[in-house]
Length: 87
Ligand SMILES: [Zn+2]
Image 1 (cartoon, rainbow, N blue to C red):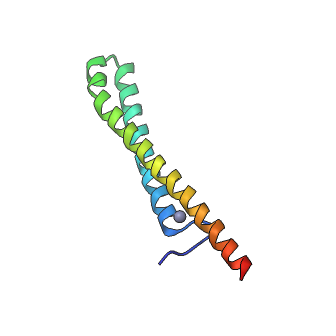
Image 2: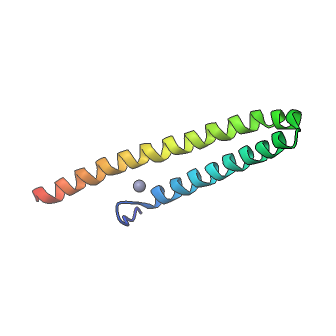
């Protein structure tokens, strides 16, 4: 069952949580890569490129899923509000 709490359902909260985790993971990798570059370990830093790119894609996918759901969600909320108003 979907519970509405200030226009956010359980799926909104779950998708926000996934997006947050993907973002933290991405930021962590970028920070790690920056530290390696600063310490002159360019080769080791370059080795993280693939992981950084993958983490960035996952973060973007998580954001897309969140935005798509929230758009569908708002449409559904508007429709049900209208349905209630016409009764
Ligand atoms: Zn929702």
